[in-house]
Length: 299
Image (cartoon, rainbow, N blue to C red; front, side, top):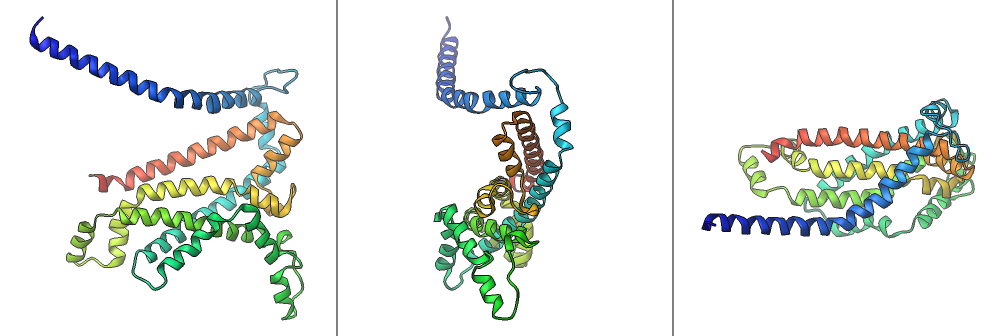
């Protein structure tokens, strides 16, 4: 055997060992994903295509057709979509603006940052209690308005209910999003910003043409994270209003929770798959957008 062939064999053995080691390290994660994601999701797909867990007759897409024609599901889907379309852009834009503001030298910078991070440390039940004290029919806001002769309003059963939940969502999530954007802004190369200043670019031009491009991965992550949190707002709404809230606050999670309590696994499974497909489509669109807008920076 020639010397070059011996070297090649040694290199191949090393590569093989590295591959085996890598697979061994990945094996626990793969097994965990298989057991706790793919297997349960396969069960959900199965339940969505049978008439009930006892007879187990395949009906294919009948459960999905029945789900789409269900009035409660239509209302829940419309409310959830409306809430997501309003709260997520507000959460991303406001947190980005706050991060840009704190990126400058301003008075009370650390106090301002701590104020918006405080909700992250407060349990959900405590946050809900604060909002109940303020917006309850006998709460602080109604007592204040009664001084000016205004009648008491049951805010959680009025047209303002969705606005209150949006405010709660923003107050709870702005701080974390802001920290992520501040980390993204800190990663923008200073030499690039200095070069742009020397070329006569203003703050707005640098923000639009430079900072936003470098922040595209952070914007992508924050948007996905905010969408996920918007679907989790059920906790707050449930604690505020219970199983069957005012119509404008009846979310998809309420629908699924009630389907679970009534043991309607077919409807629950079909709704879970519809929500999963919706999330996959949204993430795909955002991924394409992030890849397009962040491409110039990478090049």
